[in-house]
Length: 452
Ligand code: LRH
Image 1 (spheres, rainbow, N blue to C red):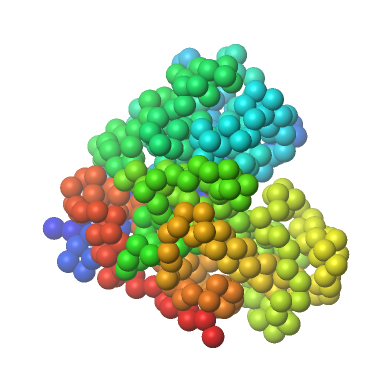
Image 2 (cartoon, helix red, strand yellow):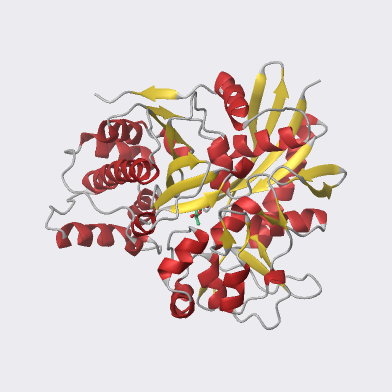
């Protein structure tokens, strides 16, 4: 009999509940509910409206039950690094702060004054991002705090009453030792942080409690970890681009690369499902285009058509530059970056969008070249998964920039990875990551883009 699981996948701009039916025909995906994720500014701090997200999640689970009758499991993934603070009674003290809020700058200085960047990297392998949990916590008042709970674990706690810290997402805190998958006791000590602030670590693919009689499983609760599970690769010689609001570009490795060169190249070693390492670089991603769209009030289709008609490679900005992190005024920031580097300024929305897409393709090429150089791993295919796989122009430009075939899709890779790991945890599937990928590839063959 076919079994149906529900993946809750929250992204920075929307959340969705996707069901996966595992039967004779392989995996059938259905989006049963989608809801907006609209952060709110409260007394100057940008925050996630976590209760509205929780409502979207429970509405989605209800829709899943209405559609399929009974669910065999539920799994939750979200963006990384952010957390809720609980008091001793388990009550959330405030809406979780958004990683794009600028309050973390003081935390960066505080942490680096105690543990210099090179030692921090040698211990955790996490690339410097001003919003890493370790920096956010250093800017926080923790006296009244009993637990720090990462976002997917917080939602899972509300569903099940059980607390835990799932490992793939724990790695993004910048406090985990990537070699052992355990917290770095040394780092906690030096930073004066109590290790029991975080609920006990748990692996992806284990029981996490139940909700209305349905089992809840941990998955790669870091959305990127789930997306990488669902890269429909035919061999291990692949690079991936998990392309949504962010583009996470890199390789799947067996061991972390903790060299000084890797740190200087700003590569991160996040933990993946089955103890793998996600050796990758954060590139700004479709955020640049989303912000341009929002600001100019133009549809995505219009912008992409205009970009396709604009001259190629006219100007290229650094799509990893933290100056593009906060919301607002994106067109002016991109134009300023062109001017400062002596390149022509975009003159219309098409040229602006073209500049973004060309810049992303170049950033992808550089990230993949650096990742292969730093790790010694060879690549003969690039898999572009996530919403960006729908963007034909971006896929074509990436194939041309990299000189390697780009395989696009699935667009719902994150939900698919979430579902595959749950189904395996529940015993509905078995096998290695490669087996899970082969199963997915059969029902969701990626679309190839060959370099010209
Ligand atoms: C993508 C993502 C990414 C993190 C960022 C904060 O959604 O999880 O992997 O670096 O959000």
